[in-house]
Length: 299
Ligand code: CP
Ligand code: NVA
Image (cartoon, rainbow, N blue to C red):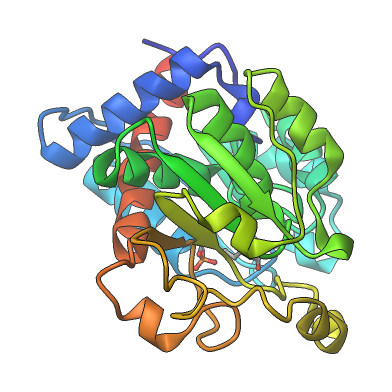
């Protein structure tokens, strides 16, 4: 199988059938039954924001596939010192086989993809985090199965937006509770509707938790939003995923990490048997390796 798309900028750059096959390959790579190799391939990794999981999972993943990954932080390359993004893109495309970028502005990852003559993967922008969605869907497959019902509780952010669309593509029932002023882009629900999902967001976390198999949350203050801290903390009162909110449910809990313990999720919930967060983190590597193999097979 190969992918129709050259780049992976958000989850619906692939079709539902391709998503299903990516998850199958990720599971096989994890199980050791798919021994695909990317010998001598090089991944260039551009980071405008910090990262633990994305950096380490891509770098380790490339090593496991027989390739190599190169960390390009803001102080390491000329991009951080005035060289235009499109020039950086053109040059990188002459050296590396694939680029992964973590950038602020989603339009910038689109520019990168337009000018780089190699596949470009979105490693998180302010709008989207599709690699996280791949890992999340693999985790849900393993823990619950594909008839799962998932409640997103918290900020309508990049992780949530890609997840809602990806869940719709995978046939997972998803509901959304966010504060009124911090909801998802309405276009996200239209994209989910294109895959048959009818998502009506609410501002009441309790309303979505009742029949959920999984409750998914993320930080309230994303990278780059530090100036909004006080107003966001006030707006998210009642949205903490804690023992009280979960009192009447056996639902598992997901978080893309890093978690701000006792802010959006309690220490107790993080340490409880409900937490699927460590599987999610591990699955980043398996899911991304499947993606790398499929994208480079197609290049
Ligand atoms: N979930 C995630 O992308 O984590 P990092 O910010 O550590 O990469
Ligand atoms: N929403 C978070 C996700 C971090 C992986 C952020 O953008 O900071």
